[in-house]
Image 1 (tube, rainbow, N blue to C red):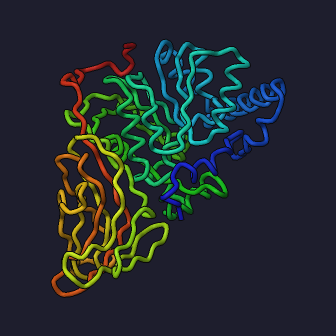
Image 2: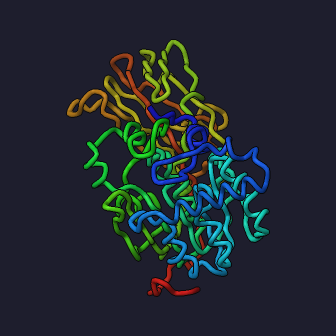
Image 3: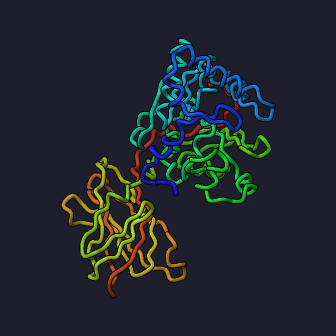
Length: 401
């Protein structure tokens, strides 16, 4: 099961291993201690091996397609591996910000760039969602070759939104993922099992993407498809999208709250596991059951989303004010006996001033005794205004802006 409470460290624990052939992977921890000459020789041999396979697997075609387009432009590359595309983009005149969860990947590319005397590159190590604020803004392209499908989509949503925000209007979002048809062909496995089939032992997660799913991940920003197609006999798919609109109100969405931060209010009871909180409330109506501290929010409107199942009774989900007495907003959620008892549903509460929120709270509202709730996710959004000029007109697919 994917450890949803430690997204970045879970991914980093796997992706210090990088592709060095069609089915071969190697840990950079074995390579990085090498001296400069040996490291550069190893890197060049791997690049040559990756780009001189049969034409169906020729992995350097994006360099020839996008290299001239990226010349003189600022590109964010997410999950660059050994730099098989990003380094050639630099050689063709791009500015590249390399972004990865694995520190080893960035250390390798930093050394290769230094040995090749390549400047015009930056590095962002993602250790937590807070690091997404370090992404450069108003860039010309985001390039993600096989890196954004390796974690549950709902956990990746904040990263998609941050990358979409980093793009200027008219900028390109380019990604390689795995298509649904491949997932179906390979047995419709659970995504934590499918990852091992597609990317080898120890891969914690892989899920399919199609165009609709990709566009939904990038919302509330609006993108138009320039290209969307399968390749390599349907093993992978390619998206080339152009950013055509930014929302008037930007929601920085989907920031998850660690369930481990929730504390029980006795006599309520909590049974916790990595995926959920199973909460049995006290019997009195309005009795607090569990709460967690809020981060420090700006004085902006926002929303809090709870995903939970209610097998019995009814609960209130809310945010408490700074004095701990006022529910700034609360939604009552009761058991829906038309659904299976453990069916999770998502509910949102809107807050006028997020700066007043001090605790996330769940409490009993049943008039007939204790309630039982299974909380699988809590997340929050903060709304920010965007400039009035937030839409572009018709743009050529390959316009050099």
